[in-house]
Image 1 (tube, rainbow, N blue to C red):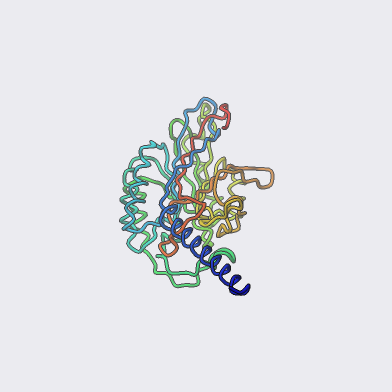
Image 2 (cartoon, rainbow, N blue to C red; image 1 turned 60 degrees about the horizontal axis):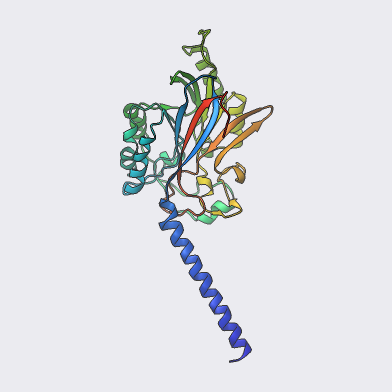
Length: 324
């Protein structure tokens, strides 16, 4: 055998090995990790000293299709965590008929207080896209996506589950003895956030909230909610005094490189903050920021690597208890 033929054989073997490895990774990412659902647990000391702990279940990016029974069953099982509050940060729908799956997944949470904002996928059905576009920056709406009727989803959330919409508005409630202000935006990825309007809504809510004249009231906890964590939104939330911000949209990068992390966030959030609990600072203020890696994926890009799907359970504790 000549040196040239030996080299050719070696290169061929390397190519075959790389192809096999790539096929193995693709199989793992689509068949295993995409369905390796997990719960991330966090503890935050943001409540008034002496307050009862408050558990918050963060659900993000279901991207639900009607046939995804395993995902639906897993989400249903989360009710056994006994959350005091559910925060849903949008992109629930992943198929034109996805509402049936969303209902099946979330119906056990009826009667548990909740708040929600929408992502654009709650308004538009998914279409086939070139996934490599995501590597060049935040995705844009180049394709014409079929419009969905948002009313049935809102009717389910508000009418059946009893959850409150935070799309460019502010609400308030008392849970477990803690007074909580909520405010949020519609999907900033589509430019639907209205931060000027939100500021007015927050002022109005604070003027009319029932506990404003209670001299013995506990310190108010301020929770902000958005789908896509664009920096302009996070900065506005910090300015409004948010103690804790919830967001989704990023899918944690969805395909990550071990040791490197997320390659993209699909917004202007730094890649290092693509998922997890961190602190967002703006001017002289700061807020805890919880970005969920989300539960689903597009049906046209059903893959996750080094970024398993997650729900997040945050236990809010009194500020006199140390963070761990």
